[in-house]
Image (cartoon, rainbow, N blue to C red; front, top):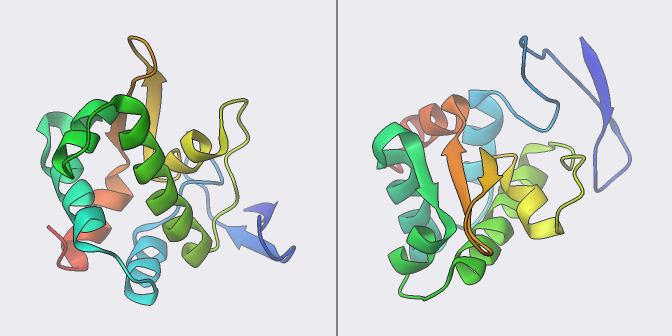
Amino acid sequence: MLKVLNWDDGTDRTADINAGDAPHIGQVEDYVNALASIEVSSCERDMLRVHANAPGREISGLKLAQTVGHFGARIGNKKYGRLARKISQAAGLPMCDSDVSDYLAAIFTLADGKPTDGEDWTWVMHGAVADALKEAGVV
């Protein structure tokens, strides 16, 4: 068991962490419950769908932006980061300990990422998130 501090209310959260998982990555039920408790716009739902259905569940910030009619990787990552923060807070997941901006750090609760060209990042959705999206009827 790993005990971590919840990022917005200071309460303890105890979770089973599988080998290789970090405390900011939730279980399927965490994401299902979070999705049921928040309002997800049609654009946000589209971003989740396109990411979950991408080959290997891998997508760039630019592709996320284009999905919702915007241009530029930075805006795609910012919009996805806002959604990720909303989901992670509802799931009670702690903030990822990272030296990147808050909106990028929030995405790590949904996906592993690495910087690519310019301001873009490539994101690979966590299996638990993909499974939760299926269970919740999003994909």
